[in-house]
Structure formats: structure tokens, C-alpha cells
Image (cartoon, rainbow, N blue to C red; front, top):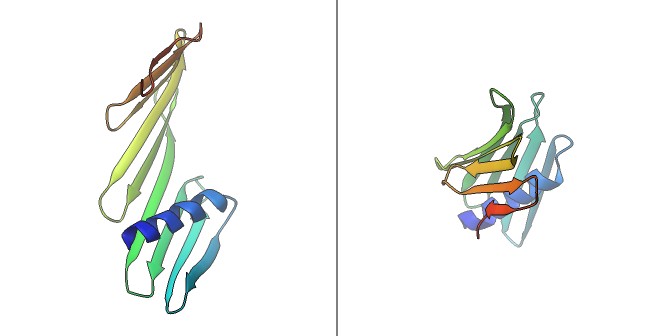
Length: 116
């Protein structure tokens, strides 16, 4: 059930980035309603609930890192979080996520890490 709610929350988050949007979907007596919006800081928020009393929310924030680069962080109502930091320097473009995965694409086009 929570998987359904999560999928709807993410889909609404991705497809309604321009402002607030509320939508309900479902068949018969089961429905899931999701409200998503982008706040004045550019951060995204999505809240979902269903007719069985389940609810789920996710908040995604973007911040600039000291010295350049960006961190995108997502936290949900179940205590899960995930973040990705990206930056570039004289050797190429780099990213590392909160699970320790890293990726570098050098200026010469070599790919290091990146799930290989």
C-alpha cells in the first residue's frame, strides 16, 4: 500500500513542479490523493493520503555547498533520507550520495565509479 502512495507522490512531485497541484486517483472505494507544490525557496513538497487512512510525505531541498556545488536532499515521513552532492573542479564533474556511491566524469571523458 505504501508503495502505491510513494509512487503517486513522486509522480505528482515530478510532473507538477510549477506550483501547487492536488489530484486524486483510484477506482471504486480506494483512492489516493496527493498535493504537491514548490515553495518560495525552490524546494519541493508532496503529501499523499488514501481512503484507508495511510499517509506519506516527502520534502526535497536544494542548497549550495560552501566552495561551490549543490546538495539535493530528500526526506520522507517514515524517517528515510537520501542526498546527492555534486560539484565540479579542474579535473571534472563529481557526485557522491548519502549511501557512499560516487561518480566522476573527468574532463577527458573518463568515467570513474558511476555504478560500474
